[in-house]
Length: 474
View 1 (cartoon, helix red, strand yellow):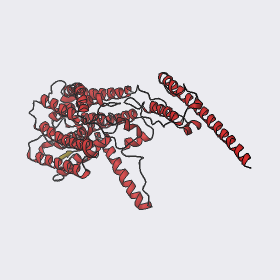
View 2: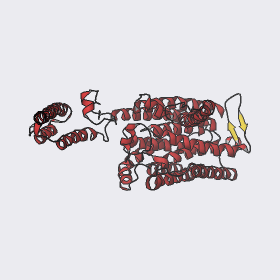
View 3: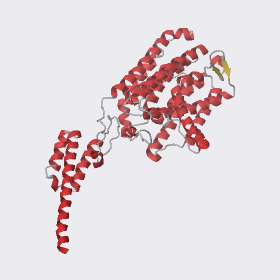
View 4: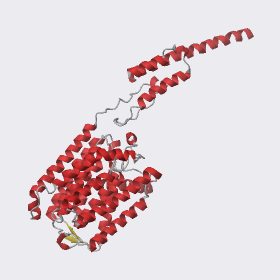
């Protein structure tokens, strides 16, 4: 019996060695096919020289780990600034033996979509402002200088777009870089992009407007101050988010600051001598059959609500390349038309800010090289709300900024839908896959430039409606 056992032992060892040898040969064949198919030829030759110069039967497990790590590095290193952001799974033995479709290399030539979106929003704005310049004398019954609305728009556009080539590298050197906390997987490739671009395009838009009106308009000066105040709140939020806790100001603190700014602005309007409909500072012009509605003491409350709600709407919208900037430019154009019969200086301010937003889009288009951050988002909201508060044009503002309001409402609806369904059925249900709504559209399969283009089209239609409503209301 001992002799039989001693004879079986070496035979079993030989059988195990033959099995290990066959497995290593199979792995060498599979890994070589993968490298030849997906790895560039130059790197493939290096890997083959290092890994397959030795016979497969003599390779140990550490050598195979090195090859697989190199292959994984090649696939993961394609994720960069010009990639689609598709998530590639690491290559393992299981994924090879049960083949699946591997992600294709990303298409790097997609900036054309962002350029086309920019051309569309710029062409629409120039055409609409040109028509308004031709017909302005019929609207306000007073002669205006040539290119009254188009001149500040084009000036701001050129100044901001050129300044971006200096300011964007400066923001990068200051290490003001975006932090991506949530969203679709491909958004994490945007991590590290410079942010807080509102530091340069907001002040430049204000300076162009002040220069054109001669630094003599009380309304433009007041709106500029409140715009810079909201920009300061946004800058504080951005700095805390980047440098301290990744969450910025708490919701309660930020809302308190926004309410405080809106209340101070309301007190200023009551004390200052500003242009208002029929010399009544608490009047809201509405189309027929409503006419002029006097809100009395409710007017300051409406002003404060407008500041807070619009600030959150612009911030929620600033989630895709060019979405908030292009939409804001269109809303500024609509508000410029709305306030033109009441305060023509504020119309200059609005068109100057619209040009600044489009100049910023030259660097924020898909794929963005800079983000506006809360510095720009809150400043845009403050400027729009202040324009409406000075003139009573709240209804045209709500119509033209429909994208901002819907983005904010989608977040509110998502929260309350979850709470209500949890109370009713014990398990919360979501209205959208993720809020705000542009994230839901991304998860539904729509590409980022297509979502932005659709928002531009909707905003353009809303701007036309808002301008028409405003002109028939005054």
